[in-house]
Structure formats: C-alpha cells, structure tokens
Length: 66
Image (spheres, rainbow, N blue to C red):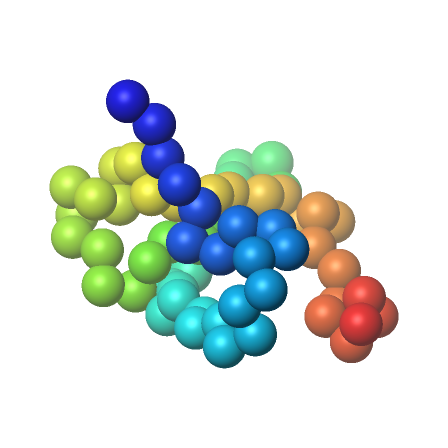
C-alpha cells in the first residue's frame, strides 16, 4: 500500500493544475490563530484525513518566495 504524488518533483510536467482549496481560521483561547487548509470539494468524512494546519507565523508571503 502506498501513495503517489500528483506532481512528483522534477516530473517535467509544466501544466500543473492547482487543486481548489478551502481554509478555516480558528482563534484559540490563548489568542493563537490556526489555519487549516483542505480540498474545497472534500466531504466531511474526507476532511478528517485530508488537511494541514499551521499556527500564525508559519506562513510566508508568496511574492517573497518567488
């Protein structure tokens, strides 16, 4: 059992299709903000396994990285 990335590194595929994503911002009682990103078309059941979360300070501006 395994998985294969949709766009493996150095695949040579220049026509990348970006997935549609949705996000949810949660503010915790201690004031920390957490952003959870998941596929926009995910069912509630799928959202349990296809997500990534990060706290504020973990993201950078896209223009700064290009």
